Image (cartoon, rainbow over all chains, first blue to last red; front, side):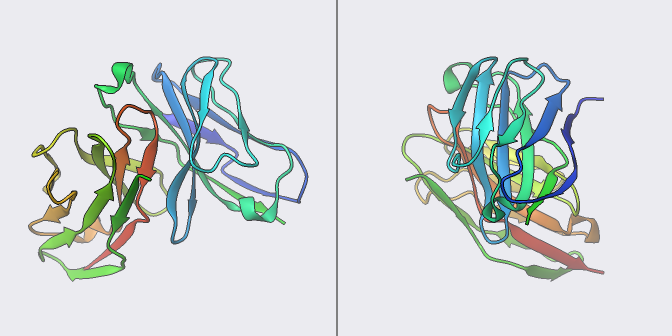
Amino acid sequence: EAQVTQNPRYLITVTGKKLTVTCSQNMNHEYMSWYRQDPGLGLRQIYYSMNVEVTDKGDVPEGYKVSRKEKRNFPLILESPSPNQTSLYFCASSSGLAGGLIVHEQFFGPGTRLTVL
Amino acid sequence: GDSVTQMEGPVTLSEEAFLTINCTYTATGYPSLFWYVQYPGEGLQLLLKATKADDKGSNKGFEATYRKETTSFHLEKGSVQVSDSAVYFCALKISGTYKYIFGTGTRLKVLA
């Protein structure tokens, strides 16, 4: 089954304790992205990756890191989490966007609810 | 900068009523436009999309037309069902980039 998986689904942690949220897709998609969803703000893009070793900042990258060492995986790293990073996080993937002319839908994971105390 | 504005919810309708959820955007160039739907406890799913002016996206009875002149992409459905209850997000992909902008979402509740 084609899917995007995220782990963990729920996480409660404390300020300053490094954490990683994993994201994996089995559709051989080039494009992957991380979003956070907050009430009244909708989804905001954190980072995205166009392919292996190619990443770029979205609208709200502060406090986050990403890496793309393999095509299927795109982990989100919070080096020193703070309470304002309490949110619902979604990973998404999409097939090729070569030249920006072909637009494909994004497939979203089930979400990771993070609470930072 | 680029942005998406959609009507605030919640929107509450009776079954078989007509639905309109307004979405307007601000963007340079020619963005691609999307509607995504989020059911409780799940991730987002693409509902429909349009990639150029006057395109009409449609799926599961939902429709939206890319109106360049009014910078709008309103979502419509002629007869809603209880199963349509969800949060609907309007989104755009910024032309020439790989960046996406989402609206704040509109919660729809359909009563039997």
